[in-house]
Picture 1: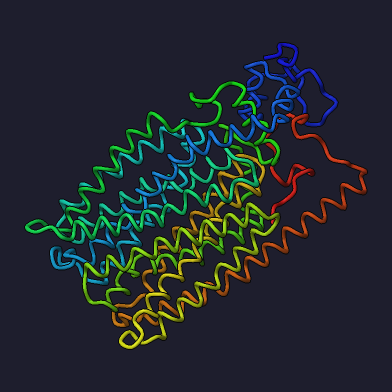
Picture 2 (picture 1 turned 180 degrees about the vertical axis):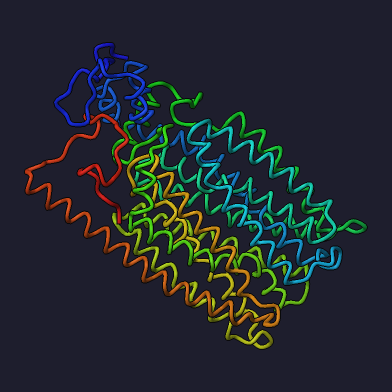
Length: 517
C-alpha cells in the first residue's frame, strides 16, 4: 500500500460537507457515516479509495468474492425461511386437521397471527440491528425460530399452534428487511436488484425442496406426518443458524474474510449511489422525513396490495391444487413446479431491472399481468374438464413476487440517509405484514375450491398495483428533472462522490442525488 496515499481527509473545509480536523469529536462521529469513521481510523484517504475503484479487475474480483461468500448465506437462509414458513401449508394437506381438530376458518388465522407478530417485531429488530451487530441478530433469530418449529410438533390444538406461529413471526421478521439492507450495503445500485432477486428467488427453491421433502415424509407410517415435517425443518434450521453465527459478517467494516483494501473498495462503491452505507446513530429528523416522503407512501401501498395477493395464494395455493387432484401426495408433488416458475419470474425480472437502466418500475408493472391472467384461469376454468388449465394458472400467477422484490429493494436504492432508509424499509414491511394478514380472509371456506372472492381480490389488487407503479415512475421522473434543471441554473457540474464527506445526507438534503426509475 502506498503510504503517500494513506492520509486523513479532515483538513479541508471549503466543501460544504467537509469536517475540520479539530472538530472530529464524538458529536461529529455520530453525524458521519460509519464507513467514513472507518476510513479515518485506518488513515485511508479518499484519493486512495478512488485509485482502488479505478482498478476494474480488482473490483470485479471483489464482486465475485461477495457473490461466493455473502450471497450464498442469504440464499441458504431464505430457502429455509420459506420452507419453515410454509411447513404449515404442507402439513395442512396431510393429517394436521384431523389430528388437531383445527377448522379451515381457524387455519386462516394462522397466517394472520404470524404476520401480526411480524408487524410488531420487525422494526424493533431493525432498530437493534442498526445499533448493534446485524449478523449476530440474524443468526440468533434463525436458531430461535428453528427451536419454535420443533416445539410446534408438540402442540395438539389451535391455541398451541397459534402461539407457535406468533413466536415464529417474531423471529422470522428479521430476515427480509435486514437482507435488503445487507444487499444495499455490499452491492452497487445497479447490482442490487438482481442480487436481491437471487436470494428472494430461493423462495421458489424452497418451494421445490419443501414439496419434495413433504412428499418423502408423506410416505411415513406410524408417525404423524405433520409433526415429522416440523421436527425435521426445525432441526435443520437450528444447525444453519449456528453456521451463520460464525460466517455472516455484521457489516462491511467487520468482515473478517475481506482485506483492508477490499473494504475500502466496498466503501467507495457504496458512496457512488449517494445513499449512505452504515450509521449506528438514530436520527429522528430522518425518521420524520421517511414518513412524509410520497415515494415511501407509494411503495407502501404497492407492497400492501402485493402481499394481500400473497397472503391468499401462499396459504391456500396447496388447497386450490387439492381441489383439482383430491389427493395429498399428488397435491404436494404438483405444487413443486410453482417454485420453479417463481425462480423464473424473479430472476428474469430482476435481471432486466439490473441490465437495463431505469426500467424497474416498468418491470414492476409488467410482471403483474401474468398474475391477472393466471388468477382468471384458476377462477373460471372448470376443474373437471380443464384441470391442467387450473394448474397452469396457479403456476403463472406467481409473477407478482418479482414486482415485490423490486419494490422492496427501492428504499435501499432510492433513499439517502441510513436512518431514513431503515425507517422506510420498516414502513414498507409493515405493509408487507398487513397485506399478508388481510389476504387469507378473502379465501372463504364456503367458496372452496374456486375461492371466487379471493380471485376477485387478487385481480383488483394487481390492476391497482400497475397504476401505483406508473405513478411512482412519474414522481421520480419529475424529481430528477427538477434537480437537473436546478443544477443547470446553478452551473453545477456535480461533485465527485469520494471528495464529499459522508455526512449521512438524505436524498432530500443532497442536491446531487438522482433517483432510479
